[in-house]
Amino acid sequence: MGAQVAALVAEWQPVVGRFLTRFARIVNRDLTGRGTALVALFGFFLLIALWLGAAPLPRSAWQELGLAADSPALRRVYVRDAVSLEDLFDSQNYRLDDLLADDGLGVPRLAVTALPRDMARIGDAEVRKALFLRTLLPMVLQANRELRRARGKVIAALDAQAAGRLGATDAMWLESVADWYGAEAGDAADLLSRIDAVPPSLALAQAAQESGWGTSRFALRANALFGQRSWGDAAHGLTPIDADRNDFKVRGFPDLMSAVRAYLHNLNSHPAYADLRARRAKARAIGQPLHAQELVRGLKNYSEEGPDYIAALSELIRSNRLQALDDARLRPRP
Image 1: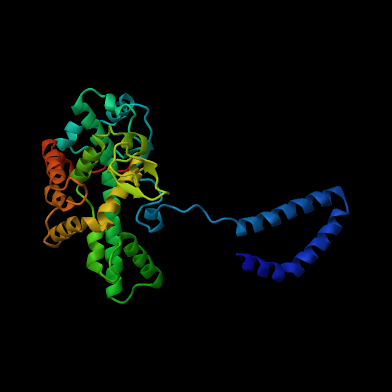
Image 2 (image 1 turned 90 degrees about the horizontal axis):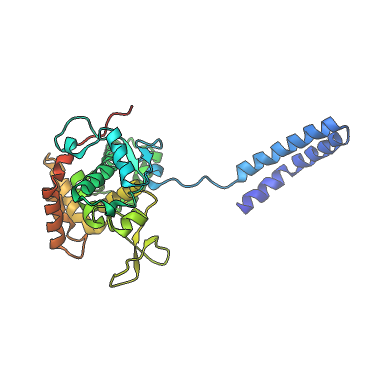
């Protein structure tokens, strides 16, 4: 940037010199001329400042890669306590029993920014579970919609590439998406195995298991629903109090929607979950719907508990009838 500025100054120095000479003449004439000249000079330097100013703040990777729309698909809401959240859901005719019975009304387009701080003080476990599931379900459905949209864009780009008509800009975009997901360069099958949805029942089960149905310190203080870890001195999140090691933190997020997106990207990109992606790709190849009880077997590396963790998730999905929510849909936009 320094070299560019120096070149610019050298190129425009004669012009600026003539401008300043005329400016001095105008200033010396009368008061009106001085005011006009000062306004013009201010505008001139404002344009230079805008041209040389800092770049705009970076957008999220989802937006930067065109995988999420810039305009919000869900209405962000903040609630102070569990009663306020329950009242909000009631005002939307949003009840878990209706969803499980497939009443056809659909899921309201709400993105609760954070769980109520008094989640742990809800005495009735079933009430707490229903509140937790209704809070997360719209965001899981929206994140899956974004993944399906991204998958469609990638398939179109790969088809164009195979036909030899993929433009340079689109080729760079495709390469950036593959890099972000950690796919092998030039391996279309590997890339498509990574850009795909996850059954809502599986995401909800993991959130419930990892956050104690929204009552953990990590969930309430850092929007950490899925137990993702961050490493290094610059790691952002909360340090576990009773962990055997102190070289990591439980990763925190600015809001719950960010946590859901990060969880899906983790499953779709981390080498530890290649088995889950392979099971999902196999189901796609033979035209079968995604089944949470099948995909959960690919999460043996998600927890140090291994097979016991998979068994716990499987039972959580079964006992809470979570697979009935896999067919839930967001309500149409108003």
